[in-house]
Every structure is written in C-alpha cells, then in structure tokens.
Image 1 (cartoon, rainbow, N blue to C red):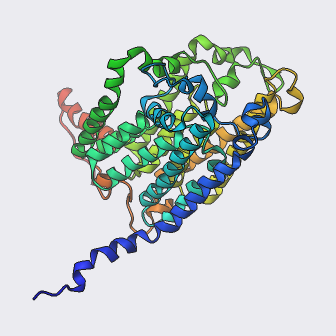
Image 2 (cartoon, rainbow, N blue to C red):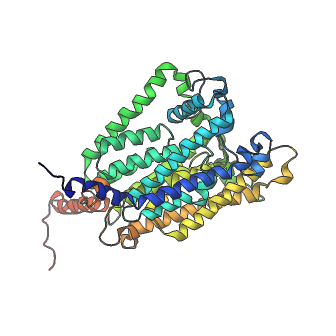
Length: 466
C-alpha cells in the first residue's frame, strides 16, 4: 500500500505563496475599475450622454457610447465587413463581441465594454506588478491612479495595455514566441506598442542575443497577419480605414501641433519664423521627422550608456516620444504611459506631478470643448487656459524623460537596480554582457586608424612613452 506524502502537494503552497502578494493588488485594481465606472454616473445613469453639453460639464464623456451609432453597430453592421471602422481590428473585434451581447441597446453596449475594459485593467495591474519584480506595489499607480480612474472608459485603450504588458512579461519569462504573439495583438488593437519592438531591437544589438528577438519578431509577424489578413480579404477598404484615417487626419485635440496651428499663442501673434509649424500640408512630415529625431536620440542613448539600460526605461522613452509628437493626444493616452512610467522610474515625486498635470488636462479638455458649442462659450474655458494645461502635461512628461535619461547615465541612482539587481523585466537581457557599445566601437575604429596611419604614410610606428 502506498501513502501520499506532503511533498506531493508541495507545489501548490508554493504557487499560493507567490500569488498572495498579488491578491490585494487585484482587489485594488477592481476597486479602481468600479470607481472609474461610478465616475461616469451622470452620463450612464443620469442621461447626460443624450443632453448636449451635460457630458462635458459632468466630465463623463466616452467614445464608446456614441460610436455604437456612429459605427452603425446599432443597425447590426459587422465592423469592417459591413461598415469601415476607424480603429484597428482588435478594437473592431471587441466592438463586435459587445454588439452581439448588447441587443441593439447602446447603454448595454457600453456596460459590456466596461466589463471587458475593467478586466483588462485588473490584468494589466497584475502584469505590471509581475514586471516590477521585487517592487510589485509600484503597480498601485496603475490600479488606482487618479488619471487612470478619470480616463479608464473613454476608449478601448486598456485592452491594448493588457496585451502589451502580457507580451513584455512573456519576454521577461523567456517565452519569445508568446511575447511576439501578444505584442502583435496589442499592435492590432492600438498602434503604440510598435515602439516596444524598437526597444527590444536596441538591447538585442547591445547584447547580441539575437535568437529570442528574431523569434519574437517572427511570432509577431505571424500573429498580426493571422488577425488582419482575413479582414483584408473580406473587405480591404473597410480594413484600411484606420490607416487612411490616421494619415489624413489633421492636428487634433491635445497635441502640440494643434497648438502650433492656432493663429495666436497665449495672446500673442504666432511668430513668422515658426509659421511652418502650423502648416497643415506638412503636418505628417513634421510629425514623422520629430518622432524620428527623438527615437534616434533614444537609440544613441541605448548604445552609448555606460551600462545597458533596462528594457522598461527604453520602452518608456520610446512611448513618450511617440505620444508627444503625435498629431492627436487624447486624455486616455495616459493609460498607455502609466505602467511604463512606473516601471521605468518608480519614484513618487515626479510621478505625482505628472498625474496632477494629466488630471488638469482631463478637466480642461471638456471645458474647452464646451466653447466649441454655439451659445455655450461662457460655461467653458478659452484657448489660453486650455493650452496651459497642454504644456503642463507635456513638460511633466519631458521632466520624467529627463530623469529616466539621467538614471540611465547614472545607473547607481536607479532604485530598481539597487542590491545587485540588473533588469528584472529584461528576460534574455538580464545579466547579459555588453557586446556592442557605440563609444567602444568608435574608439576601436579610431585606434585602428591611428595604428594604420604610419604604415599608410610609409613611416614607422613609434613606441609609446612609458
């Protein structure tokens, strides 16, 4: 007769012990999801969505509810197949899922979407905690951060965040194929996670660990094609609407380009020598050029820093560069950046200042939109206070970027790396040796040229002084 020993069940307590710290974080993330839903109370239960400026004066606007009609979902139209949608296929899939459960009711459509986004928030918080390594409580900024609660259900951004964080955690756990699949699905939901492939490439170049990166790219390419090609084959025009819309749209709310296009800047005429910044015909070129310059700076930093940067530091810098050069900067874009800002530099001072600026912008944009409604301008704010909030948000993010750059150049000041920790979310990069550093490559080439020089001139190389 055999007897069961305590060792047979040993793995379960181990798993449970590891899961215990995440339970309160999950509960707090659920609380954040509920608070975000209650914030929309005047619209969801008070009818402000249907009452003109009420959705602005009560600060409870969402894209989800009106798009139920704008995208013809109330008529039973299938996204892309029956009607072109201005979002990538991932969001179209979520729309279709919620439409099937809504039964033609826009409020139910909103509620179903909120449940899905609430789940995405909880999952995203837990993934952030896992990526944070020994600092899981830093994920509280994502769970109950004030800007997160205010902006959670404006759009479908939380879904892309959960997928992107899941992909990066898969990378951290040395599962490159899964990392590629999840990152591709996040790109198919919102475009911004594409920036993370650049961060992975730079660290791959520095460490020469190519195989995990190539597997990730292959997995991403396959997954992206798998979810996009069927829609392209069914209705190519419906599928490409998102890409055409992104290219054709002009400068929009929140972006610096929108500020540059105004004829007056804080009560003064726009300087003539800066008039090109307001040229709508050159907007795409200027935005792409500005992003390219910033990303080039990130690349030079990554390849010249005295110590290899952490993956989350580069992800944050690349994503912040993408946001501040974008043609539109909607308030819900804060959801993109919060987990990466926390993982890049988990110090509360600068993070708190940035959150204040994001909340300031959140309230400013709705008050500013009121002034765009005829005969309602007295209830809102004008250009100057609105653009002041735009610049406040920008400057706090630039300060965060500068602090992250400073810690990359001075890694001994990085709190994540205290206690001989290298890169808790770096996966294959963690504890990796530097194989390529741009400064060394330049110096080595320069030294080689110096050594070759005397021979090329026909002279003899002199010994160095002792």
